[in-house]
Length: 245
Image 1: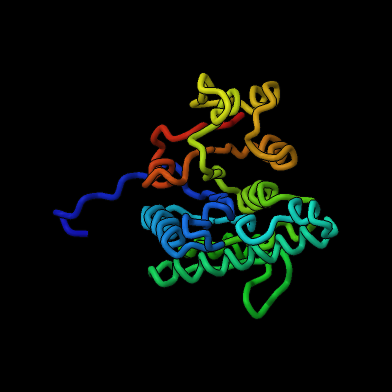
Image 2: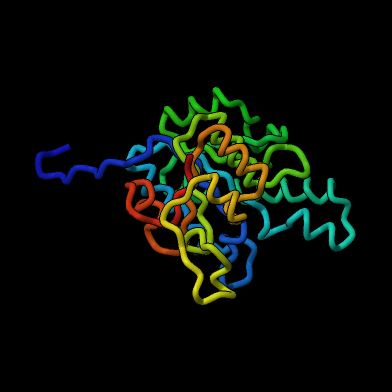
């Protein structure tokens, strides 16, 4: 680095798991994977990767197929959940392709063996990839039906000893009640796990939430649609709602 080059800002977190809803990839065009949205999300991941942050990603499959929705249409729940897991693999490959075209070396690790398109999930190998500066995308959920990708994110964060889970959503944090229904809803800057439980706040599903609480993995809930929000979160700026012990 030359003397005139600006120093990189210091990231607050060394290793993060970014949890993305599959729905965020669906743009206004109505396509399950919108090219512009995919590129914007990839650019945000690249920006924090360039700060030296080790990045793991868990992405849902709701833009393609959601197991619970399939059950309402007569699809067996177990079969529907496996279909949803395969949808997360499609999203993961799309994200990997976009990141690698931006020069970010990326690996997809799947909880369901599919060796021709993804590595198997092996915690030590995932950590090694992260230490070598590669982004790792964790696909196929936990590999088991009846568990959400929220739970997969909590599990992977615990396994790779991530500092925090970034839950990037379409809302700008956790509120005391639904802000879409109640104009007087109040957003929290910070919450303890105990407070969230007592108030029955919908931070993550109960299994994922318990996993994070038991393993002391904080959760930051913020709005992905706000430009630069992931980078601001990594730098420790006030973004969204932090849930912690």
